[in-house]
Length: 168
Image (tube, rainbow, N blue to C red; front, side):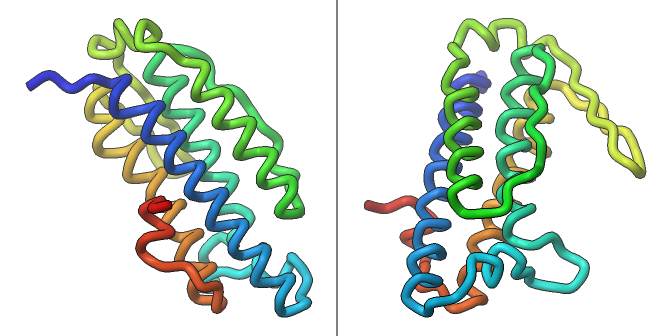
């Protein structure tokens, strides 16, 4: 069976970003009910050595736009990580969704033959497009989406499995 990069990439990231936005809205409502500052959640983290909620959202955004850009053979657009409020995070998510939705199936026509390289502080990763999508891009995106969910849940926000799955 042949894997369609398009069917498994932009659409999945858009859905995940929409779910992330809905989760954040529940977090924002929680803070309003408790009459607490946004920083209570935005700076919350699961462990001292993990990034806070704010950064988890930024990285999920980066993961989505970076994945589709690399798979389409385009330069990854940069977004400054300067958000400091829920409103600014919603704007970032919407901007990322608009970028990702701008891709068409034809943009991935040559993706199967594309090699993708990711450089990190500690090592370089080399992938075929399919391996990049299945073993790096999707798991990395969902790691940060899941971590954002877990931070909200850990802080008392009433979110559950169906919120994470995007059930209406």
